[in-house]
Image 1 (cartoon, rainbow, N blue to C red):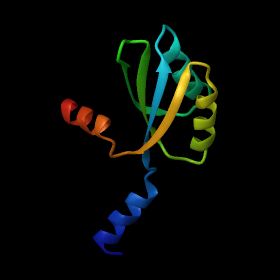
Image 2 (cartoon, helix red, strand yellow):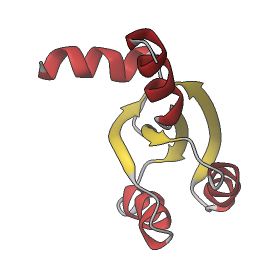
Image 3 (cartoon, rainbow, N blue to C red):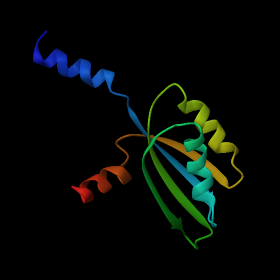
Image 4 (tube, one colour):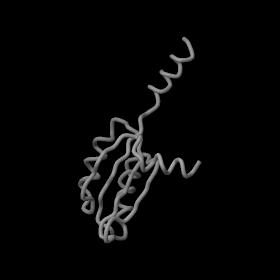
Length: 105
């Protein structure tokens, strides 16, 4: 097997990353509820970013997670949380985490 094929196989074996963008009501405990849901199900979150939007009554949470067979169910459960308004799914190349990774290099 040549070096290119080994690299391609390694890339295929690695789980893909996904960014979940949540719009939530902004008050104490919301972040805890969201990440607690992932924690209770032993679903690792690779990165978290949260910032208030507009007048501060709403926040946006970005979660960097690994794709696996449980992700669809996790998204459905997050959508059921009382303070979660919307959930959007983006590819791992979403600008928010790319820029953060550049900052930490």
